[in-house]
Every structure is written in structure tokens, then in C-alpha cells.
Amino acid sequence: MKSALIVVDMLNEYDHEDAEVLIESVRAALPAMRGLIERGGHEGTPIVYVNDNYGDWAAGRPEIVERAIAGRARDVVEPIAPADGSWFISKARHSIFYETQLEYLLREQEIERVVLVGQVTEQCILYSALDAYVRRFNVAVPSDAVAGIHPDLADAALRMMERNMRADVTRAEDCSLS
Image 1 (cartoon, rainbow, N blue to C red):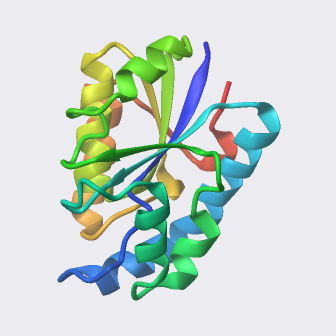
Image 2 (tube, helix red, strand yellow):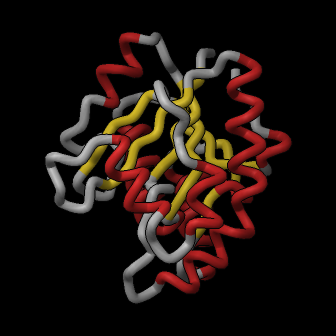
């Protein structure tokens, strides 16, 4: 089953109310995220960055990356920033599928399974997993490669993804990218 690794909303200026809590959660999840991205690159797994455009419809990958690196948490943005030429899709809402061309890209590449990493577990990751499931993609969520704001809600979201969406919730080291 062909998989794609989807990096969700990791380009963030962290200028919102819950930023400090989220930054700490990202710091904890960052090694697992980076490990999966590196492994995906070595294995030839398609890697797609899908990121909020924060209401700026003129902004593309370069502008979103630049703003995020200039934000409050450069140390968590720089290590995960997409390289030039990376597949990049901007979004306006919580789900990576809502009003984006992601589904088209995945179908064109004959992708059957998405591996979701990034933030926020109890929001964008959860909604994206549901949208992937209803579109009949298999879903995997490495629990140590997602970051949340509210640990109790993040844990509940992971359980919901596993139970209701049949997601493969495992640790990054045990997550297959093929």
C-alpha cells in the first residue's frame, strides 16, 4: 500500500494564546517528526507539507516559511521547514483536505495511506484524519510525532482516531512509510 507522509501546520509563528504549551509539545515531538521525514526521504515516500495560510491568500511556501522562522519559536520551525522544491499546499481551515488540492494530488500519486505528523493533535490532526478516513484513505498517526495543546484532549483524539477511523496509532519508530 503506497503511503504519503503529511506534515501538518508545522510552520507557525506561535503568536497565539496557547503558544507556550504548544511549543513545548512540539519540542517533545520534533525528533520523531524529523526522523520520519528523514526516513521518508531515504525510502522515497512522498512528503507533503500542508500548512495554514493564516488568511494571507497571496502567501506561498516561501512567505509562510519566512514568517514562521521569524516568529517566537525559530528553534522548532527551522528543523522541520520544507526544503526548496518540497510539495507544499496551503490551507485555510483545520482539515488538510478542506478546499485544498490534496486529495487530487494523493489520487494522482496512487496514494492509499496517509501518515499524519504535526500539530495540533486535538484539532487539525483529528479533523484531517477524519477527512482522510471518509475519503477512504488508510490513516496512520505516530503518537510521538504529533503535538497538542491539551494533553487530555490529545489523548482522547488519538483514541478516537484509532477506534472510529481505524487509524494505525503507533510510535514513529514502528510506523511503516510504505
